[in-house]
Image (cartoon, one colour):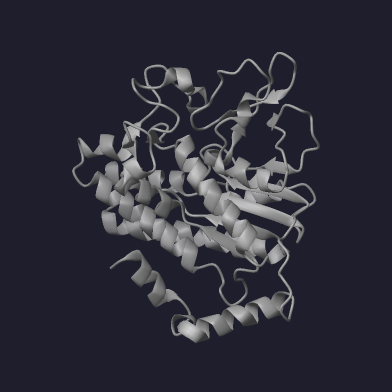
Length: 341
């Protein structure tokens, strides 16, 4: 069964029946509910941006010789410039969202501007990690979340990797792994409902990338013939539960926007030459593992032969490269501008 068919089956019955003029009527009603009449809906302008999730949303803090914050991303970093603010090059999707509002992160602030974007995401975070999971991240938000906040959240990569590791280690069968991936995706949705949207904050919720299309999956496939299919299935299970368990009776496009990272990754994977520069590599890591032991060490000078910042979908075995971040960031900006927050 396809993802779209499965999700359609799980939507409220009234929504699946809306077609044509009926859909337009629903859209008009939503607009009227947000402002009434024919007046244009104003874009939501938050007071701050709060970034949740794992390291894909992070900038690891570092200072340059002048003491300016010029951090490193878990992707490909362009550190070739001699000027300050190297972290501004090859932005992550979180940086794209911040730039939409004119916000800066402390970790990338070469001009010492007032910080209005805050990274609470944690390296290797899983949904329910007591020290680094979503509940703990929200608890660290200064003053708590409010209706004047925009939140971004992408998590799940390390959840799926943990579940896959149990199958690989013989501790869990595939059926049990699928059930666990679904449980974790549903748990993420519960945190969205109860810890984020319930506060009145607006949110951009990102699905996780398909790990079955990653260089990690290619490597695993060499010894486990079903690895790619299983990793894709676990990704699908997590994302489907996340998407369909956000409370549709309480929250809609006025509260959050959905950014389909898995769809972006799938599109690039299927037609790499349409999105990537030559040699257009969708499942090979751009970073040379022999030179990079920590993801934030990957720079333009540590890439495999022939690679560039725009030629590979993945920076390393599980982290996306700048081209993917750019595409995801564009979709996130579109959601932020077009959803009637």
